[in-house]
Image (cartoon, rainbow, N blue to C red; front, side, top):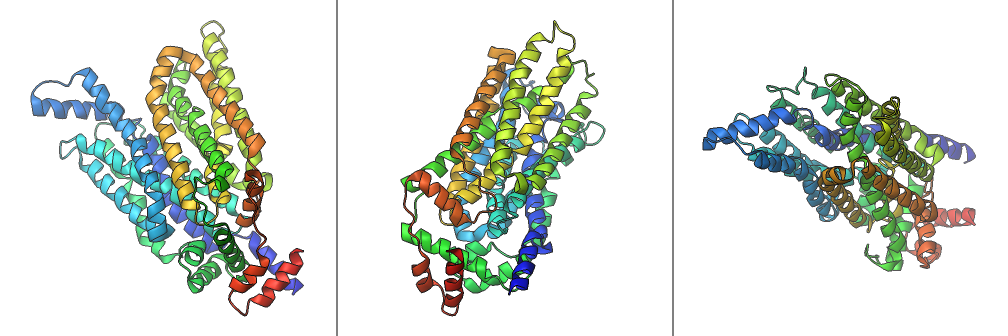
Length: 508
């Protein structure tokens, strides 16, 4: 028996091919496109605005006024996060009715439709279609950004949950980088290439639509929500690469039983008070910490540092590459260092670089080397955000909630994420006009506030089962969780009861 246990422990440490493939396919088919569409319209913006102008002139015979053009362009940009908010609100009903995998498959239809519309907009001589497609693409991204972490988090063994949970964020950064590279003026960021650049987003969805059906649905969804132990067992055996998955099946029954004992908490109930506040704070901190502002400002910071305007595109690409490399690093260190340390370290780096950046931007006209300090601050900020604030909150939502409340938690977290994203996009231009470089002090304060909250409230969740994390949070919420081993033996299918007793005694 001891040898079997050692073999099992070794197996627990390795990533099976099935799990790796399902993580890659769902992250490439969904998360990648979220990143791609975040930055795809930055490079070709002047050519797209020119197309808006020409189309309007062709229809009405008069050129478009600059204020109308600004309105249309800000709609083109802001419809994406607004769609993301709609997508987040659809998470709860869809994942409960269609499953996690089913929702991802349905979601591809949004992306493929939007890609076809955007790719043909120039031929059809219509710019309204681009704005509509940005909403549709936003709905796709809103669903993808919530469903992929939930799907992968529920499939992963506890010792790989953090690493696999960071994979969606890794693919978001790869998507951003791909859009930056393809958007270079000598590739597709030009007058002829931009419809192709926008239309390419349909390809990853098509690949996912053709390959994901061959992989299993989330075992926790199959067992706890669908009550189908047989399918859940088969899915687990395939994902883990060995036959004996009784321990995990039992842990799911325990979670199910615990939820029934407590009565299913609605996400707004007092029993989940601290979990709910924590995800809201982390999601707001992630978006309101100024990451979009820093990306937006980067071009101008480099320009003022004397980088010539022709090379700025390449500098932006190199920042995108740093973002990918640091997120990849997070995949490898999240299981050894833990979630909490990465969040804290990330927010420390972000707040320090925002404070220094304010100083550097103010002094760069008087002190010659300050412009180099501002470049360093941007790079440190991107590194800080990539290791903690960007990837970890979605992992934590998966871990802090049990099965029945998890979809609603993602819906709340996702809505906060997209609302905050939308707000920054809307307010930042005004903030920058009014406060100039001092706008980064506001971001600095938000980073510090989030950091303090995480330090006081958010527990470490690495290598713990969902039930263990639930017990830690229950203490915070001052809610008693009944010890349920005895009732568990009654609810667990006969034939497994001896194992349950053995396991209970080994836990004593």
